[in-house]
Length: 354
Image (tube, rainbow, N blue to C red):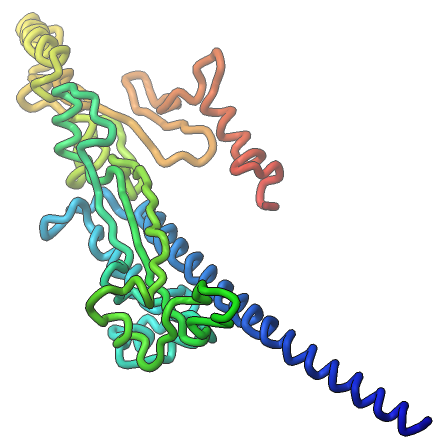
């Protein structure tokens, strides 16, 4: 009786072992394929991060700075160059910030630590992040005066960035249980140096997964000024491309018919007033300050800290004025916007708590 029970137990253990072996034929490849899909998804997210992060770097560029070397604006090439250096190892978490970062060394494999799938920018159809800018297509009204302003100050525009990564399989067998299925489990199994394999010539459809090409675009503030602007009445241009220069470019431009019509009349009026001793000869237009010359720009603006008020010296003493439409005595939209910004900015209803 005992011998029979031992035999039955051995049969049961043998059946369990066979079942386990058969199950492992399915479980192990499925487990490895799940890891492969995890690697593949992460590489796709890394490529998306590369493009998204790079294009937003252009939102903080200094568009007022004078460009050099034929660039659209100062720092255009440097921005995408630094992005390629950051993401040469496909992620932004390990950066040495050295002149020749070790994570970008093509002889090194230390940034290829994935278990199954390895991504590389060096595949023939892959592409590190690249950006272009289209200036004239953004914000153009087709008006001569506006076009003259754009040609003088427009340094931003529509920034387009794109990237594409290639991924290869370094663990999964290409085929599995061919007796039951003629469908390959994965593309060709690769071995050896990831960079060398990526650069091989010829048809790569059998060994490389090319991820979708990531595209994103950003319309920048085409006339953005990085420095805060401050001008008192009577002051003129302080540096190239400042706010005074921009206002003067529109106000005194020959394409501005209102200015050309007013200029002659203003000169006649001032000349007659001086000859009739109604104005001092010191106010002759040839030597007058901007604040006293109707043919020249006189503007007032101060960095805002609360209400945009400014003290203006005038004939009977100094007076305080708003230097923008903060108070229009009807809607006061600027004032209301400033007051509500802390409550509702980006959906935050409590300032400083989101």
